[in-house]
Image (tube, rainbow, N blue to C red; front, side, top):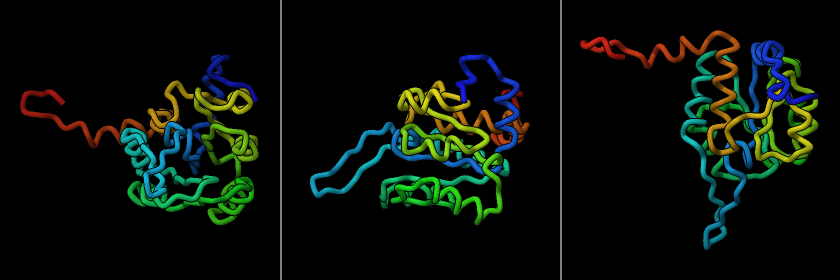
Length: 190
């Protein structure tokens, strides 16, 4: 695969994003900046981006299902997924492809109808199969060189929102999701 953003192949990118029915997110390095913080008592802390979260909610409202597949097990990820309404969460999986195959069977989808955003080589088994493979600019070089798109925003700093917006634009649903926030005021300013 090539990084389409470098080659300007926007028609193919748009077609790939338009086919997405399920968008799957890695966590560390994608929904977070990849840093691992531990408290004094050993509790794991993660920083999530609010814009990413709202983008995921908008994507769901537009009709695209969302999922998380992560190698790490973390209660905080379960909490974040619950807050965002992400129903399909698989954590603590080191064979991400097996988790992906299980999810496809459960949802009766083909790999071509899925998108996945990852940042490290453990994500390659899924990235090499999905119809819309994405990485972040701070991802591993062997991952970035094998995806359809590399985000402008870094992991944990708007990358997920960028992908959600891109998919909604490709599926012509962005305007409808935005319309609910644009209300005319008496002065005519939205």
